[in-house]
Image (cartoon, each protein chain N blue to C red):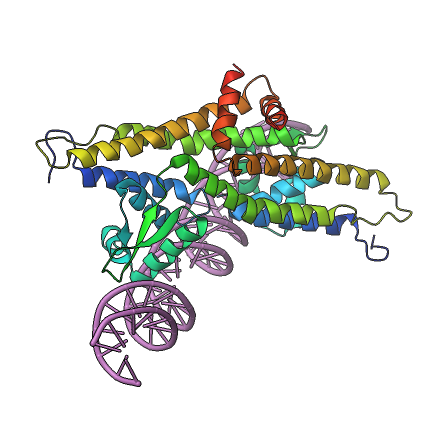
Length: 180
Length: 180
DNA sequence: GTGTGGTTTCAATGTTTTCTGAAATTCCAG
DNA sequence: CTGGAATTTCAGAAAACATTGAAACCACAC
């Protein structure tokens, strides 16, 4: 159904949302299409099957399948079935905070943990010898320590946000807001 | 100077750090080389000129120039000069917290602000008409509102981290840690 | 002005990532 | 089992992105 005056139909505004979300994704290490699929599921709010996504985003079956799977892996989309229908449907998490908790959880696992592992491995890997580099090495290790401390704190913070208590992040935000 | 036993020389460990930092960058929307240049400047802790970076990372002059400029734009590397030397030297911010404050500041500016602008634009863009879609449109706008609320909070939080008081983020973290 | 060392730009090129589509696989009903 | 619908996989095609290198540019000393 078209629009009245300068207003747009639902589908057009959905498309804008999808585009905006996709644009943002590129800066986030997730592919544009995957973000668009997520945007579509989120903004329509209903379960869609692979063909729905293919048709709406004009992408191939393979791409739709991979993107939807990726979203399930991130934990922000879940699979579901309808009675008497063999197709699989996909449904986006509708609570924005829950969704971002899942994102934080995954990013810690995928990025922070491996980095911290590398950093710890590097620490004390420098040979001392009778070298004239002693000072330099001390500085170097100090820099590594600062990085390790930073990311450890970040990790702890993240864990807290994500914590089983559920609304961890919101509580934190409220506390911060009270700090004036 | 080579290593004694199973330990490595400074340069080798620096190379590992550079590699680890570069690997992480890809998931962050910044190019690997730019991250490597930053890693090099951070871990050596001293001002380096374009040629130093070219030689150490084995990259072209153009690439080095662009990458270094990018880092300056992010506000985590600064230009400096040495007396009696016409070359420009680059120096990484050495305080990890200050560095991440700069990153947060830029990411808000580059990603969150434009997204919020789009979201606000979309809100109330749906025509009502005599349509049977009224409920759907109400739900749709509700979803947009939740997104807007989330990112507004995120933005406020970010601003506070970045705030002129300087150590905003650290204060926040301490408060959170006291929350048990 | 001219020359020199340093820096930036950008078209061409190379590399990586993403996407397609058809074949292989899974899953279920009968 | 068998047949058929739904889904996944993956090699190759296409698109996006990063890099090179040489020319243009700049700024300063003379």
